Length: 147
Image 1 (cartoon, rainbow, N blue to C red):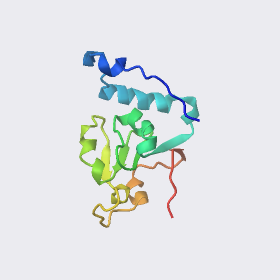
Image 2: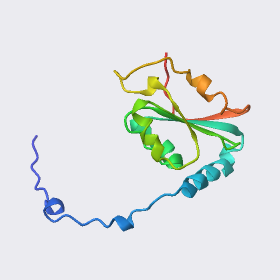
Image 3: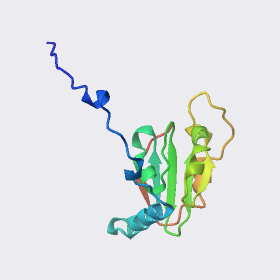
């Protein structure tokens, strides 16, 4: 069955002007406050460290805490109760992450890069994260399994 529907073209015939002053600007303090709120939540009381996985379709958790938008590839954010933070990105994100104002360490993990990108003998994920994972319960937000 084919259904015909008249489309209202008002939105592109008479576009609404955007006032960019109406858009919120998030500061480093906003991200710091979000992380503090996370650690103060009762559900996180038992965790010493949280590892947050993101990819293009599941980017919002890392974006919420850092402002970093996982655009093309996968990324991992490690937060611990001592305040150490690590963001692991692929080749496409290594320059883009420089826009993040939050104080965190950044590691390049080539296996997170798009196919066909240069590969090297990067450290393993566990090697990269070892100084950020505290002894205690580990929280995980999002995941992907690898062979």
